[in-house]
Image (cartoon, rainbow, N blue to C red):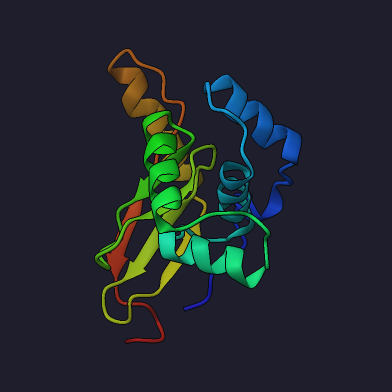
Length: 151
C-alpha cells in the first residue's frame, strides 16, 4: 500500500517552529527533542519509536539518543499535546505531530497504512462537537479494512 501525500507532507516546518513549540510547552530545547519532532514532521505516516531511531541513524544525525530517550520524549509530548498516538493494530505505538488533521486507513490483512484527508470528517467533527456546546480543535479518524493490494 502506498502512502498518499498529506497535509504534513505539504507543510514546511522550520527549526524555529519546533523551538517555539517546545518553549511554549515548557521544555528545555535539546537536539534530541528537536530531532524527534523533525523526523515526525518529515514522515508521511505515523512512526513508531523504533522507526524514529532508525531514521535518525539513517540520516546520520550526531545526536545522543536511544530508545529510552525517544519513548520518554514521545510520552511527554503526548501528555502536552505536541504529538498524538495513532491506534494501529500492529502491536506497537505510532505517533504523529498533533497539529495535523489526517486520517488513516489500516489494512487488516497486510498491515499497510494510508493517510487521507476528508472534508466530510472535518465537518462531522465540528458539527457533533458544536452540538454538544464545545469547539473541536482537532480530530482523528481511523478506518480498518482490506486494501486493494490484499484483496
